Amino acid sequence: MEPIKFDMMESKSSGSLLDQSFSASDIEMEVLKQQLAMADDEDKAALEAERRMLQLVLLEAFAQQRQLVVAQTKLVKEYSKSEDK
Image 1 (cartoon, rainbow, N blue to C red):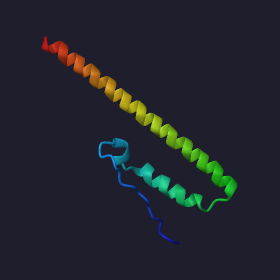
Image 2: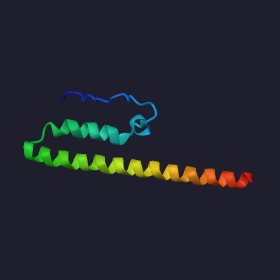
Image 3: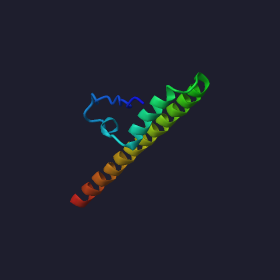
Image 4: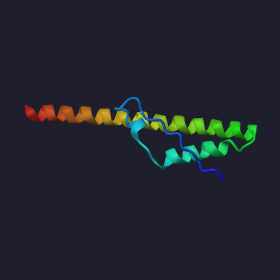
């Protein structure tokens, strides 16, 4: 059996937390991509569609998390201003 090669791209935007994070799910996705090459066309299409949906869900969760951080930061800023008075 041939070893699995991981094709991890380096982030071009150093400020992107999404690009900088590396977790077990990244490895799982790479393994799934490798296994996908062994599936027949019908199964491959179904698995690929499911993988894309999962990526969209994860991206949406990340966006919501960023929005929450922004909202919390605004609250802290307003609280800090009111304490200064």
